[in-house]
Length: 79
Image (spheres, rainbow, N blue to C red):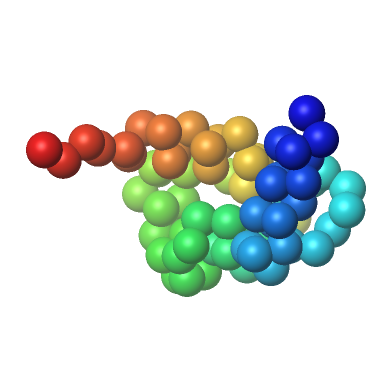
């Protein structure tokens, strides 16, 4: 358990996310870091319906669970 927590913190640090609290919602910039894509690419995924978004006025947020589902749906095994 302690090793898993340590690895998770290291992953977040490597992704440029240094918040010690676990977040569920990410703004577009943070989502881009999490997905390893530029912000415009994240916007394109939203516009194409590949990622659902939570709107708060003009601001948009992505749920980390939706981003994880997007990653899982798009995994391929190349033989």
